[in-house]
Image (cartoon, rainbow, N blue to C red; front, side, top):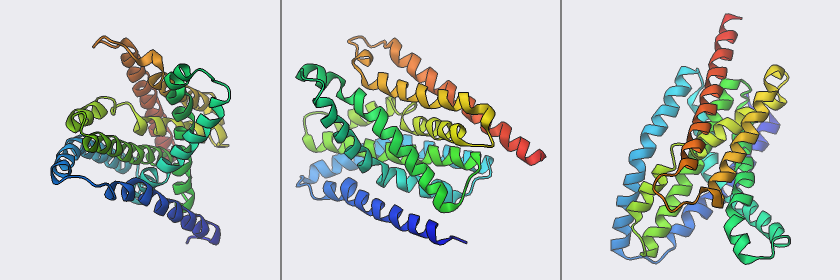
Length: 274
């Protein structure tokens, strides 16, 4: 039974999601575009869907394997798509304003603005959304934490990629299909895994049950924010097709997620034995 505090939290969650629905989709629907651009957008989103659908079914399969109810996946995914996105936008803008008081050179500011904003605002709000979903649903187990983190990050990633592809398609300067392919190329080790690792990391840091894993929890949070920071920084950029930095960032994040998943499986097995 949902108590009064959780019902209030659900109401706030829905209010924030309502704002996000208008922010993410309403503004897109108001654009004055040609019929041809609309058809192109459908095609380009189909390219994204070819990547997103298998990803979604993989998360669903993991949830089933970990005995996590679908309501956790659905609630966190919805919040990740329509709450964490616009809150992150607001957070990025606020950090930009603060940074502009310290970084006076426009070239330096423009080169580093994405690295100095997104890793902090986005990871904070995506994880916060996951924990909000868990609180509303009354879930405290580490398996649900992992699925909520995956789902929140996945929802955020879907909406962000749709926004990028739509902007390029309606702008008409570049191919929206190529933008979709580019988003997929960086999508395997992106927001979905970022949020899963950070959310579990924060949980381990503050959980009284898993005190022995606090160092690992700190590692999850710090390493993922650092990974996101480097990905958004000038260090990532290169004129060569072979980007060694991308390889290291990809391997680092996926390896950390594997360790997180192994820990969750281990604890689930321990719980069953108890």
